[in-house]
Length: 141
Image (cartoon, rainbow, N blue to C red):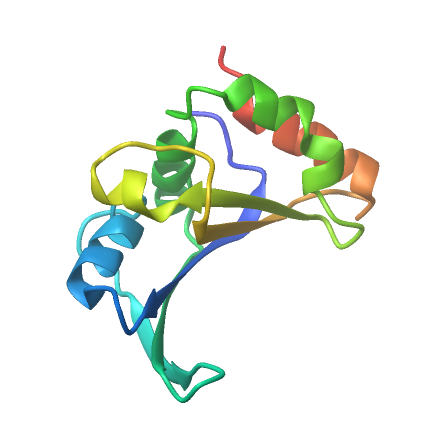
């Protein structure tokens, strides 16, 4: 199996007071390997409403590969690859926003609710190299 050109992948979702935390966690877990630990932090919104931040950092190659395989299920994966220049930062971070509701229902779609952030391996650590490595990782053989 090919190596994974990412140091780590962070996934994060906000659970607002109007949402069911178990459902939001389920949406986040739809990207994660089984039994993967999810961190929970409580925060407060503008008007004192409760916001729970659920997050997970995947650092081992098998786990990263699992998350990537899920992201690769996107119907518009080609669009994602075409937008890599805008989605990879100067710090070699690759960002994607995924639809929380779709994920809860077992589908992978671009949208809002889940933030995917991956640190791309690049030597030297330049945006161009990171974009190329991310492109290779996301292009189906």
